[in-house]
Image 1 (cartoon, one colour):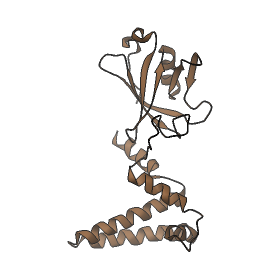
Image 2 (cartoon, helix red, strand yellow):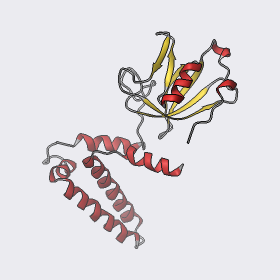
Image 3 (cartoon, one colour):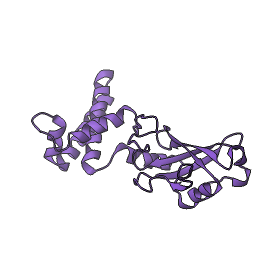
Length: 203
């Protein structure tokens, strides 16, 4: 769906030809950074579907990630009530800040809160010592074993769903989710990949 924005209605004059652009992760809702756009930067953003700013220090257009590769893929742009500030929703392709953090406020931008942190722990177990980590043992046993465990945990969750023991049901649900995350990692994917598909379906 094409982004609908009337550039002629925007008040670029209020700030000397520039308009503040607040960038938000379209998936997590986390505010990532603040930049400035002139008319040409906004037009370039809409044309390329990559967030582009006007760099006040370089005095030229600057597409985010042109050097680092950490681009911002455009999802949507909306002006505020006064038509003098933009809210830019995008998918970041890596850390947004030039200092290497997820946001310019050094905040973590996990796709699903704690699940994102858990994914990082699971990822860190890849190639680890199977003797010291259950997750490392799963990875070491190969994709077939990981997939089998997901199936086993799913069956156990279904069985507990038919009973009234809340604690057992929730524990089985947690086991299934954990093994599902391991399977995603074993296949080279993350929860963010799945959430992005769900987000697109929701639209």
